[in-house]
Image (cartoon, rainbow over the protein chains, first blue to last red):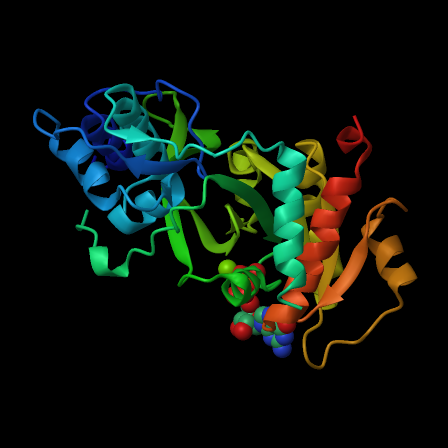
Length: 115
Length: 197
Ligand SMILES: Nc1nc2c(ncn2[C@@H]2O[C@H](COP(=O)(O)OP(=O)(O)O)[C@@H](O)[C@H]2O)c(=O)[nH]1
Ligand SMILES: [Mg+2]
């Protein structure tokens, strides 16, 4: 029998996240992240890779990080949540607390300019 | 697992602090990838999630359900409007991925369902998947060259659309036309009763 007993991709994902199976916070595909000015020493290689693609000057979404690193979004979600816990990554802070409806209205205004 | 080529990474302007996720759904060949590409300001990207599918039948030796591994891929694009980044995710159209929709829909505020009038019957399961997740949606007929044009009422009937569900047409290859279809969706999202509260 040569049939694999475990899905190698899933095993790999488990190893890459250091055995963590669920993100420690609510992070989704479009959660935006910016790097923080915190030393990267002591981080695992995969955490370094995630941090390495992030910038302090402009945000990227979890989905973009996953696509650029060719990692499954589920894995990046877990790694990024850990890096938020350790203070290496943060979500960008809005100047004012804008309600969701106003965010959609801003999208609407922008779309109308494309027509 | 390669390393990222940082010169290809398009960071958002520092002024962007919010994001919006919309799904572009539709059967295989409806024009999802084309649509995402025509609106996106970045070269469309792709995420690939390995999943284990439990398939029908039982492993004869171990007596366990047989599993096969596959990948759920999503094309996505981005467009920045002021302080907001709009992300458009093209969902996989295949029927066997319908169980993954809980995950695909997570965090999405709405869906644009693209249909090709030559395969209206293929849209049933996509519409059911969207409705089952309670996602607000609008429908856009992607008008392919040479495809017969039908009156809106006939399309509504064939798709069994609720009278309150907006139906539009678009050319997914054209940015302005795709933007118009998205405007109808976002107007629908901002006018819903849940938004009046
Ligand atoms: N004529 C025409 N062709 C289109 C249009 N949209 C997509 N296509 C073509 O139809 C094919 C399938 O489109 P694609 O975006 O890959 O569909 P997907 O499977 O839903 O992602 C591609 O060859 C596209 O170039 C359209 O509006 N008009
Ligand atoms: Mg496609």
